[in-house]
Amino acid sequence: MSSTWTHGIKLTLFGESHGNGIGMVLDHLPAGMPINLDKLTAFTARRTAKKGDTTSTARTETDQPEFLSGIYQGKTTGTPLAAVIHNHDVKSESYRDIAALARPGHADYTGYLRYQGANDPRGGGHFSGRLTAPLTLAGGICIQILEQVGVQIGAHILSIRDITDRAFPSVSLSTEILKAAGQKDFPVLDDAAGEKMIACINDARLREDSVGGVVECGVTGLPAGIGSPMFDGIENTLSSLLFGIPAVKGVSFGDGFDASAHYGSENNDPFIAENGQIATKTNHAGGILGGISTGMPILLRVAFKPTPSISRTQETINLKTGENTTISVHGRHDPCVVARAVPVVEAAAAIGILGQMVAQCGVHITK
Ligand SMILES: Cc1cc2nc3c(=O)[nH]c(=O)nc-3n(C[C@H](O)[C@H](O)[C@H](O)COP(=O)(O)O)c2cc1C
Image 1 (cartoon, protein in one colour):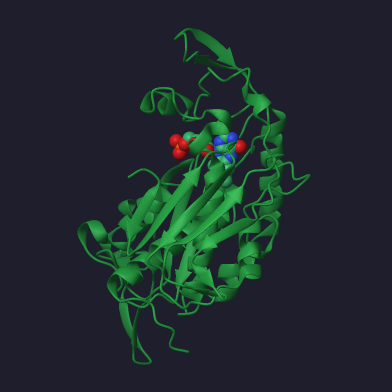
Image 2 (image 1 turned 90 degrees about the vertical axis):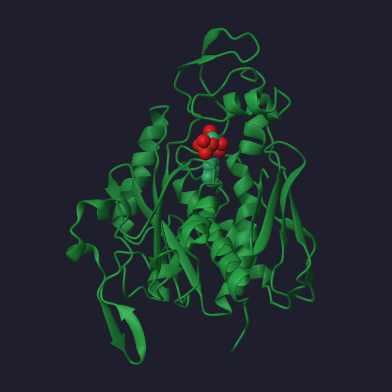
């Protein structure tokens, strides 16, 4: 079903970029879980474009959710949790002149085909990056539930074009490192690399272009033994959510594609028994073997393509007439979506991990 994901918990996203609002319904959440709304607002604000920030869109939405159900006296009820986020800063006139023109790299062409032209094309409609606001809200709730059972999630920008941040340590990943980037306006571990990334994004913007990059995400505290083989593994579950984020073109776990160039002796993670616990000395597997958690940090990377909407003139077609033409996309767009996508990746990972736990063993506060 489009825009509905289910595995233990069930998430539905709805809305269009320039419609009245966007929102989400989360079902099968564990009941009685405290949700701190101030903390939730602080989390979702990390995705929101900031006024005056030239590396993101000039569209500034407050993204304040209206909860319709599912939270009572500060706790999850366990029945469907529904929230709507009203759109306020809408300027549909920017799309009037190009309404019939398919933006190269965007879903205008395929959305038009799929829905026979009945889709709302303003700002990308349901295909807009704006739909990541309710996704982040849903994930923020899941993150709080996971934290109560000792599972922590964090992410940072690993690269923009060829400029790279330090990677997360794959074995000793402390909560401090995991959460460090999320506290910054530009979410990197190494601020000097961050400065170069910001310059690269601004340079692309000034040249009427855009850039992409990679987000690295880590999950710690997940007990060993969560997941299933074949089609129900942690990689499968998380990938189906991560590929739901617009502009995602690649997802890898542990050493990912690099593992294919190594010998088995280099890639295998030796097991060791330590203080009555079984761990691995290295973590090339990214904390997953056979789709099931090893107890080591889960590590994944998500590749984002450059933002499709650029003001440089490009060739395209008129969807109504089928004729060749050109397009230059003005209006308000992120010259790079990667920084804003960092909490979105954390949110998607949280939904998947919570879903796996609920499906397999439920979630119980022990402290
Ligand atoms: C946080 C975020 C913000 C985005 N902002 C824009 C934007 O301003 N302009 C744009 O053309 N695409 C933007 N995108 C990407 C498009 O929504 C996406 O490329 C498009 O829907 C086509 O989907 P696909 O790239 O997954 O194939 C954004 C994506 C994310 C995750």
